[in-house]
Every structure is written in structure tokens, then in C-alpha cells.
Length: 351
Length: 254
Image (cartoon, rainbow over all chains, first blue to last red; front, side, top):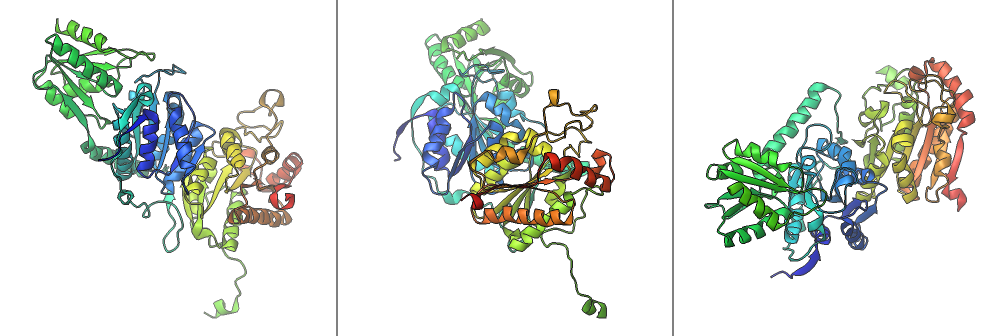
């Protein structure tokens, strides 16, 4: 059995990336993910052939990622909400040029400079594209330090599989908490070769060109349609967890650290004879529409809880297709929702 | 068949250029600069190991013109992209091709910091004192008093600042290995420009560090001048403000 290590969320992401063969990291410090950039510096600067650069800006960092990915490197960047906004131009280019990479967003309160406390206000940005043009990221929403590890490794794998940027969408609570984690054995032979498309030496082959544009509308449409097909193919990668879903009075949909808090609410509610179910999306893109619809066939009350004004609630409504009543409860500004608050909200809805 | 045998071929297209016809306006210097870059690649026999980065702007199609691996950058970000590529493939030769809006305005941070890190890349910086592709707006290198779409009454240094001299600015840094400014308006200048561009690639081959060649260039279309007048304008107006020469040469310093 693998060794159990007590690690802080941000550092666990870094170790998971290195464990998965990531040897290139470009980032810029920002709270509450700074432990991650520091961890990558400490580790990568000691690995021969690896690169760590504290870039001059988030914009430079994501473009270093663009270059490193084009050259075939397994590469990551990380930031928190305002910094992710700065990266959006580069993320759109990565998506258009079909370059794989992992982008970590340890969300904090927004908009603007916002706060440095946990929040989930970047859901729309992460799942609906974020930058300009038609594109999607593969988005994972871990809810424990162990999941930060497992999903970071999976993010690299799916990014390569689809040649698309993948995002780890955590929050300040996850990034800062410490939990025991295990690292399953990882065979670097599983990293797919990029020799058939990456830039490099062209001896014996035609020169390659990686191009995020086409001025001919019919040609660009072909590129965009190809991306569209890829997003359809990605739908089969959907992951979610259901808890206590057999015969609940109400079902809560929540992701990330809030889903953990809901699990506490479920225990508290049981003591009072209230039966709460949970659907927890693990991938936010693709979103588990079908799984939620199936639950909506049996349960007539849904509550969506988020640390935002209500963003994922829109996808839940799309999934439910009007079959059940969907309510929302959220806090913003960096306020973390408590289990008691959620229980009070449930009681109101069941009255 | 006899003709081929009798005639000696004295001038050919560089091997490092493709057969795709250039898209540049008559009198524009981009074509000459592309040729000099390709000749340097030929002379050093590096095309098959070279990765080039095309900018946004008129030279965006450079990705089609060079016979080597190429990638198109977001506006201004080429030095960061070059950094990423070079760190993954340190044995390859990496160059960026950037205009003045790209390098000296939106991408100022990227060029300053790539130079300061001493990234082992070659930068070809085309300074034509205007935004060509978007139709002739003011560039950071637009001369004082110069009329453009966005300085219709002439660049006023009191509110728009003075033109930025990139070679001088970057030469204040310790890290760069080679920084030079060249022009193409006389055969003798072209010979010097070729030498500088070749040196900028040779320094990368030798692992010496960051190298940048600024090429003063014409934009007859956006300047509203004939190709001949444009060359004269460059000689009379640009060279006095942007002096030619080597600003940094690590070989001569050490």
C-alpha cells in the first residue's frame, strides 16, 4: 500500500503534477494559491531538464505554456481568479491551436480584486469558455485533497487525449486545507507521444505549423466545427458522485468544498428525520445533465448551493427540464456556507 | 538543355523560404528581412532545427513563408512563447519575428523580461514607425510630429510621449548577449543587416544568450509615400533618431 502523506491542498496539486510527469511550470504569485508556485519552484528547480519560471505576468505565463505545449512538453500553470482572468486570451489560443495543458484555478472572492477568501464565482468563466470564441475546457471540481491529487493526474491525461486545455477548479478552502493523501503508482510510459504533431526538428519530414487562426471563413468554420465535435466526444468523460439518492425529501447539487459541507448537513438532517440526497458533479465540463435529469424523475425538490450568486444553478435547471422545482442558496464575498445554514434552507423548502 | 548548361546560376531563392508568394505591399521591407533571415538559416544550415514564431500583423503569414517549424503568437507574446519552446527544446533554434506595435507596445513586458532572463532566443524586430496591418495607426516608435490615423495632427510628445528606442532600452540590462540596429535602404546597409542577423542566430547556436536585431523598415502604404520616397524618409527621419550599430555585443565586452 502506498504511503500516506499529510499535505496542504496547493502543495498536493504540485506533487501530483510532478508525479504525472509534468516538468514545465510557468506561473505568477497570487493568494490563495501561492504555496503551489513555491512548491513547483522547490521541486522543479532540482529536477534535471525541468523548467520553473516565475513569469513577469499571468499573460506571459500562459503564453509560456502555449510555447512549451507546442514543443511537446507536459506543462502546467496555476493562479487564482483575477490571474485566471488575465490568462483568458492565452487559454483561447491554446484551445484553438489544440494544445494540451493543465490550468489550476484556486478561486477567491470576486469580482474585481475581490477578496482572498474562498469562492466559486468563476464557474461561468471556467465552464462556458472564459475567453473569446467557441471553446470549452475540460473542468474538474475536486472536493478533497486526495481528489486534488487524483484529478490533477487525470486532467493531464484527458488534456493529452483531447489535445485541449484542462482546468482544476478548486477554491481557497481546498487549496489551504491539509489532509492525508496517497499517490498511486504512475507509469510515465502512459504519457502519449507528441512526436507526430509537436514542433521540433524537421529532419526527414515537412515543417509543421501550429496556427490559431484562419482568415478564410470557410476554413475557420472547419476548425471550429472540429472543436465542436471534440466537445461532443468529451461528454463521455462526465464524472459525478451521488449520495443518499434512494428516497430523499430533497436533493442538493453542490461541487467542490461546498459538497463536503453538504455531506455534514446530510448527517445533521438525518438526526432530525430529514432525508437529503446529494449530486456532486466531479466534472463541471462535461456537466452531468443526464444524471441530474434521472434524479429529477424521482425527486420533486432540488436545492443548488454555491459560493456565488448562482451560476451552476443554471445548468441544474437545464438538466432538470422543469420536472422538479430548483431553488438556490448561495453566499458570496468569500463567506463559506455553514452546514446549519444549508439545513435551515432545506427546512424552509420542505415546509 | 543547352541553355541550362551555358548559363551559370548566380542568384537563387534561399532554401529556408517556401514557394508561397509574399503578401507584402510594393516597397515594404518585410520581404528583404524574410530573405535575410532565410539566408542566415541557410548559411548556418539550421532550418531543420529551427522553430519560428510569427506575430500578429502584416507578418502573420510568415508562418507560411519560412521552411521550418512555425507557430503563430498572440499579439506581443512571442518572447514568452519562445521561452516556453526553448525550455522544452533547448537544442532547437528559436526565433521570433515581431513588429513595433507587437514588441514595443502590447508586448513590452514580454520582451524586457525575456531579454532580462537571458533567454537563448533570436528576436527580429521590425520597426516601421507605424501599425501597418490595421491601416496606419500610431506606434510606440512613431516619430515626433509624424501623422498617423491616431495622431492625425502629428505625434505630440507632450501627450503621446517620445518614440521608444528599444535597442537603447534593452541595452541597459545586463543579460542580453547581442543587440543591434540595422537598416536596408542602401546595399551597404543590407550587407551589415545580414551580418547582424546571422550573428544573432550564431550567438544562439553558441549558447551565448538573448540576441535582438532591430531592422528599420518602410511602410510606403501607411506612410502614404512611394517606395522610393519611403526609403528617403527612412534615411532622413528615422536613422537620425534611431542610430544604426551594435548596442551590445557580449563578445566585445568580455
